Length: 171
Image 1 (tube, rainbow, N blue to C red):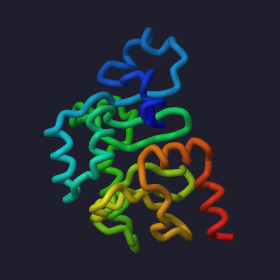
Image 2 (cartoon, one colour):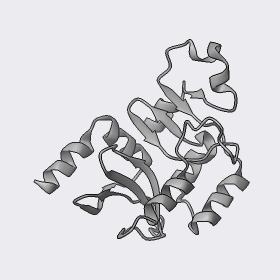
Image 3 (cartoon, rainbow, N blue to C red):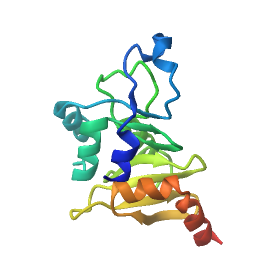
């Protein structure tokens, strides 16, 4: 079982009405997912970004939508086009926001999937045809490769490996 499987196995699905029902929030749950995403919704996001999601990321989105918990966030999609909960960050919005930033070096082939909360964004390079390539981009970091699988990325985020790695690069 991989890191993502471990994180999502007991995760709570946060959907429409989740925050309206206090009984859903009485249990101490630290991991949340958006829920399964229909293929048509995934294809629509790809069209909006003019990319094809790598297989690993597509499988994650199809099964879980997005993830938030245990100190980790993976941007994604929600089952409804209009996410009234506002709980998860949408990959289309986050990617468009990043690529529209003045003076950015981020091209249209990158997909924003996470952030460290301190100015470093983590991106999937959708132009990579074999496997997966996740890079760090931010102040002092121009596309530093940090992972080749989603599980590796999640494990390193959970163990704070990137903070150490990226601090060593700028030192």
